[in-house]
Length: 209
Image 1 (cartoon, rainbow, N blue to C red):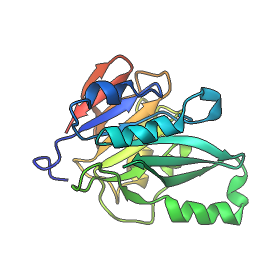
Image 2 (image 1 turned 30 degrees about the vertical axis):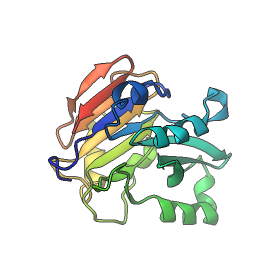
Image 3 (image 1 turned 135 degrees about the vertical axis):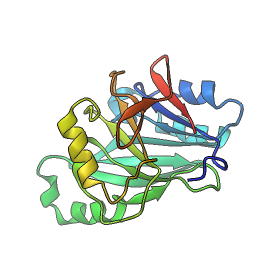
């Protein structure tokens, strides 16, 4: 990723709301917004379509998850008014299902999630799946974690995350973590030292790339 070419905002939210997009990107700046786990589940009363429409109104990509079936959740990234599945997260016991294993192999990979023509490569992981290695050896710019677990507090978890993803992350890679209602673990972190970057604003963090 060339910082001179990619002038964009990386936003990590602890609440699944559109406000960061409307406030931070209203000048039509490009940006990537990572929402917490279950952002678009029916119980939250949030409209998936509203976020989809926002990717037409703003130059933004949005990462979030929703439950598709009882067996698994899906992480999507939204861009240009379209939703693309990025990763499948099986619930307990669902990994025995051959179909779900096939879906995991198909979607759990490196994705280009940039809202502009300049590529931004990312791994999108959730909860315990963050400790599962990918087959790809591509180096990534971002690891986006729409997660209910705070992976950034405990040293043992950080060490495991770095170990299983060592093929994909480098000194300039960023961890963008969104934890529901948890400000401490929500933000943008520089890997591999987990230094927190950006600024905190009313429930979300912004890093200017």
